[in-house]
Length: 306
Image (cartoon, rainbow, N blue to C red):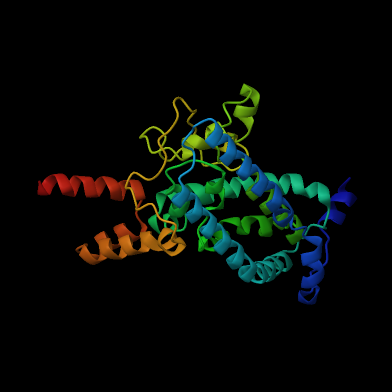
């Protein structure tokens, strides 16, 4: 048994010249899934129209699509950087795991744990919130919202460094990443009701994730998990869906199809807040404070001026 364990952790270092073969071994699941996602989105649009449900705002949906297309281009640009970075970290530790497919299971669980904290911190630190706010700015909840991801979200890669330090092979890491991204696609719909209680207790379902996108007080900053909902239950951030949420931000922005505006409007707001703030402490608060605390602070200031 221990010999098998030692063999698992005795993988050789990866030569940087082997990047091409590494890319070919990392099956591009997302590319294969694009036609399926496109068909499911068209079915949802048709169903929404047929049932007379207002699940789609044309301008907003186009904005989500343009943001998603930009993301594809940026991901292609950063792919090599991420691969070389993962090889560097993998080679750095002495307990490297072999490319063994069963290691995908523990890797996926650890990836989901890191994803929970990456997501949670993105809601409690304005710097990281600025890399996530685009996803929450949609006021209609549909499958196109899953394409609405920040162009600068790669800052949050730092939260996944523990996966490399544990020694998981880069190929396993990239497959776990793709599984997580694809699993979150189906969560963004208003048309799937609550599922069997066992499923709702284990996985992040559309019902669980609708809560996360809600702007009601009891729904704000809840249900951060990506695949397994038990992280929220473990860390006290779980909230079941009680009534259908009102989607979007507490501070509304213009409905726009302009991907530049959708991605960077928060930085304009940060600049304005920092500029008017007095003292370094207040300036840092507006840069790195909790978005919720900043929102309440502005409400308080507004009331004092009235």
